[in-house]
Image 1 (cartoon, rainbow, N blue to C red):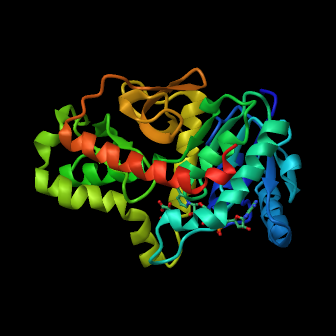
Image 2 (image 1 turned 180 degrees about the horizontal axis):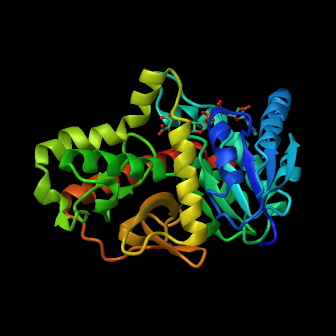
Length: 326
Ligand SMILES: NC(=O)C1=CN([C@@H]2O[C@H](COP(=O)(O)OP(=O)(O)OC[C@H]3O[C@@H](n4cnc5c(N)ncnc54)[C@H](O)[C@@H]3O)[C@@H](O)[C@H]2O)C=CC1
Ligand SMILES: O=C([O-])CC(=O)C(=O)O
């Protein structure tokens, strides 16, 4: 058996965590040979509810759960942590865009960025889930100057998974048949799900679908899926968000599938003309515990315009939180 690693989850008494924590403790994220110590952060009024979640985790008798810490102190929650999943933040309700949450949530991520900087393992892998995820990840990253910016990522995997399913269903194929799809940009309604380089069972995706369906059906369905879930469920996506967080962290830690791409919100190095330093989603492959941007992906004028529009939105979000960016 390997030595245990520390996994911090914030918002641990919330909806997403109620699915996420049990899957982390079962080995779904880091493998069935990797014991974990869960370091769970909540705000003080939610500590009693968190105690209940911890009791349920105990009652699962997970062989891989090597310990648990429940706290309302970020300095304790991030101590020596190897993996940090920043989920704790207010979710949106009907009629809101995710960036409407900036003023409510941004402060959380500057406090937590500082705590990560001061206390986490120097190799920590950070995934921001709380919305608006890309800009919250930027805030956390900028408040952690001693940690490599590559270690801060934002969750785009739910958008990626949504796009996979829409394309597989339309073409009558399975998820495993779809390869090299990417969602570019921001986790927002400007995100750009791009299938120009995707294949389905070996055939070019664009040869199997028509432009009107792609433009007027597929892209808006993926962009608006979070809002559609809120409308139908009366609450924002929780189990599918937890699942995407597991996929993102598992691939980052253990490697992504050979011959395929994943979408990750990562620190832009200027690839594809996207401003350096924004947290932007690119096509990525992961190996050896690290990610790299897939280079040389063809982008036509249709794609370039959409990639720019979502970049522009990220610049505006960044400028709106300039006071939190040291
Ligand atoms: N990036 C993505 O693809 C997705 C992001 N989300 C976002 O994830 C976030 C969480 O969603 P849910 O779990 O459904 O919300 P929730 O409201 O059920 O849970 C959030 C939890 O965070 C806690 N919290 C608030 N401030 C905190 C702080 N400073 N430190 C620690 N914990 C804190 C709350 O007490 C609450 O228990 C929301 O911002 C939501 O919009 C949701 C779905 C997908
Ligand atoms: O839409 C929301 O507010 C929750 C979320 O991020 C998603 O489901 O993609």
